[in-house]
Amino acid sequence: MGDFLYLYRGGQRNPSPEQSQQIMQKWLAWMKELTVSGNLKDPGQPLELEGKVVKGKGGTVTDGPFAEAKDLVGGFTLVVADDLAHAAKLAGGCPILEVDGSVEVRPVMKMDM
Amino acid sequence: MELSDHLFRQEAGRMVATLTRAFGLHNLALAEDVVQDAFCRALEVWKLRGIPENPSAWLMKTAKNRAIDVLRRERTALTFAPDLGRLLQTEWTLTNAVEEIFDPTGIADDQLRMMFSCCHPRLSAPAQVMLVLQLVGGFGAREVASAFVSSPTAVEKRLSRSKKTLAESSVLFDIADAADFALRLPVVQRALYLIFSEGYHGASAHAVVRTDLCRESIRLVRLLAEHPLGAVPSTFALCALMYLDAARLPARLDAWGDLSSLFDQDRSRWDRAMIEQGRAWLERSATGTELSHYHVEAAIAAVHAAAPRFEDTDWAAIVALYDTLMQIAPSPVIALNRAIAVAQLRGPQNGLEAIDAVSGRDRLARYPFYYAARGELELRRKNNAIAREHFRTALALARNPIEQRFLKKRIDACARGAI
Image (cartoon, rainbow over all chains, first blue to last red; front, side):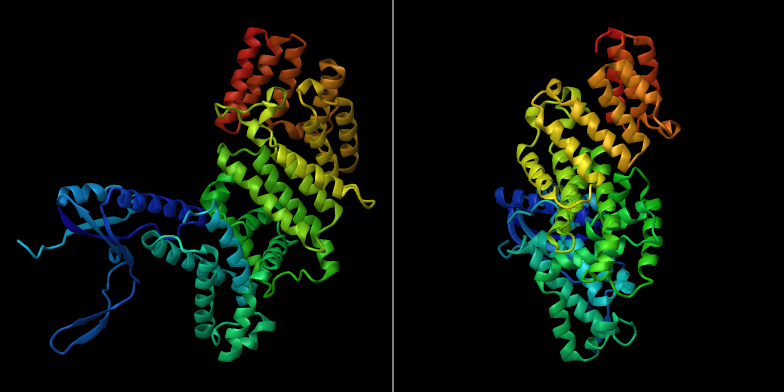
């Protein structure tokens, strides 16, 4: 058992209102599924697609990260799963996959080894 | 919290209308961008955090904040609607003016303004209909294309051309001007009627799409009927017609998703509540001196609705109503429907003669149900071979798999010699 972070990237650009509604329904259903199965630890937060990067000893601030919108992390969720394979399997139900997006699955390091 | 059906689509229509009032009709594209942006935000936030208590208010507020940002940033670069332009020039009047525009009590009027603007006299009827669907109904280009069996690219092109015509004016149609309102009203009514007809008789193979079109036209015609200047007998008659016809929709497609003719529809599946509403609108429409074709079509639908079984239909009344319809709004399709009613009243021979007498019959040459009607009547005269030829011609012209399945069944019926 462990915690895993889902990082969402990409997704459909400019869906019509009806398409948005359908995508929304699928997310609601998926989140509910994760909640019912006890795998949802924290639904997480969406992220704005703008930001700054602070770098170097002098703390140089630049706009960024300079990537295409599809490469930017748009949000995250924390789940509980048996192992990495299980977490990845659960991510397979994520609606973002249907609209050209991806889920990065990262195990959260444990304190007690 | 659950999402109500078509919430996004409905809100999109409302938001575009309101934002266009804020930015001016010539900045329609900007209004659409802001709406798109609000929906993207809603999607991102709601999918993780869940649906807020009042999703409509959330969306509207997001759009409003975004509108204030845009107005602040662009007020020197863009020209806005003349009557608002001045108010938007200073910070303290700007916020007040936007608050006033976004006042929820004005939403119905905003949608009417947009609906009337879309029915621009320089645009063709199909172009008007597409604009109403997209800008007032919140349909995407793909959904409009699916409704009219066209390609999304073609629809997109046509829509953007039509929007240029709209954007030549900076203000939305003034719905407070009684004379202008009365002049444009028939055009708006026709657009709503066409949306409904596309849903009811149309060529789209998707039952969902068609129900959506019917539902949307009913929502819009009600907006019209609830406005003091739109509340006239012809609008009420249009309401009646839509309710009475739409009541039969659940029975039009049978349990297998196949088209079912009036002859063998399961009438227990007709929506009684809608029939009652349709009758009430028809009663309300019976005032004044104007007899619109909506009145007559609604009356025909009411006669059908009154018959518990097909054989109880008052065909004499229906033929008489078609006669009236041929006087006020003659067309080959109406004449064909009249001929079918004549066949019911006086037998297939008379029906076929009435079809032969349809003037402008050549305009029905690509209409599958013209041949289907001939086939049906020949079948009743036991001329099975001729009937089968007609159904085959109809099949070749069928516009979707539902029509194809229906016509194949009729061809089979010819082989069996049964009706």
